Length: 314
Image 1: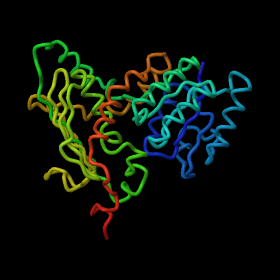
Image 2 (image 1 turned 90 degrees about the vertical axis):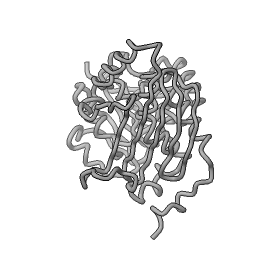
Image 3 (image 1 turned 45 degrees about the vertical axis):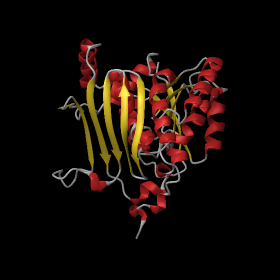
Image 4 (image 1 turned 180 degrees about the vertical axis):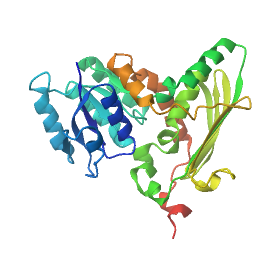
């Protein structure tokens, strides 16, 4: 039987992947909410979904459905809202009797996970998170290979992720550390989760450089020494990239490039399939990377003013 979904942040960048996953798994979108009303994307997937620009009205609608016919109630809430709202929207999902499927980062602080775990237990519902790199076939094969080499090998890993962003980024919620968690959380969380999943728990972490648009450091994992750099500064893009390329992503292990540029198309759909069968990634799966991103954030020098960066100067 198909399930009814609701979605928060349906006007955002990542929402189309969730709408596609809901559609491809044979389910229905009952309701959607976003403060912005530029949500024509719904016409491609679920034109009959109820839409709200005010969360309070969305909440009231979900509660009305909860008290009605079982076939009409919301079974899952997909959370695509800004990072700082994820915690509250997970709580909303549990309160209306639904499971959650929450985009990265699940929460900003480790103690938020503890509180959500208590609410999970009280409600009997589950919070799933999107760790899509864990279902990438090439990365699953790499993990199996690495596990065969343990425990004798400690690898040298280099992570570089540069995704060019314009002035708008620092003005938006993404440029506000208290709302996005900063670069390590907003653009780095998937890669930190991947590295921990591949190489084991964090032993040491250091931040070597940080400003509003770039951060870099060192992580010692159980089976790897990692140097990492994250940036939204287009000036750091390697020379030789095609003009239309605004992103550079590279992970090397002992000098060998890890190739996983293909195969991203259906990763969210696979995440949904897992969640719908009770095998989604849990709060505890998300905890190690949330811990690491938080530790990087508090180790980063504070007081970086977004409007002090040249990207915002005329």
